[in-house]
Length: 132
Image 1 (cartoon, rainbow, N blue to C red):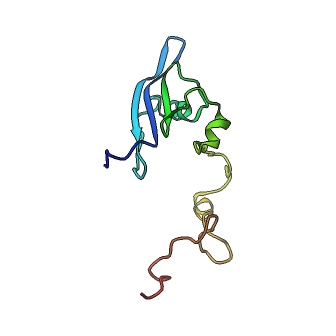
Image 2 (image 1 turned 135 degrees about the vertical axis):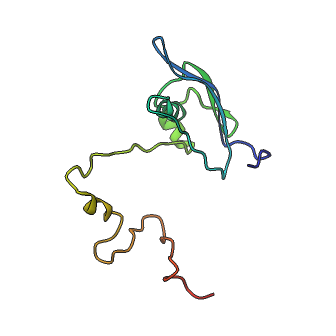
């Protein structure tokens, strides 16, 4: 990891309490550009709550969220979104009546069995690549 690159996003002693329950307890982390990070832990460990604090869905009891050097801890969700911070919610009930075989085919176009393209060309497979 390149520790010389300034963090794009930081949390410093981020904490949230729900009554007497501490859901996130003084979490500090530097998220650097180009680094893939996984937040792991058992159910109830506070992973989703941590993301909710970063995105602004929840207010921190204490601590700070810093984006590109600016303290954004008290900014609203729309203000954070304008700065490029957002989150997506996992929807698990969209295709409740689909069996596995039908659900697993959703990523492909029914007319060609090729992947859907939303943001430019899909990655080419070896059989589709052009010679050098």
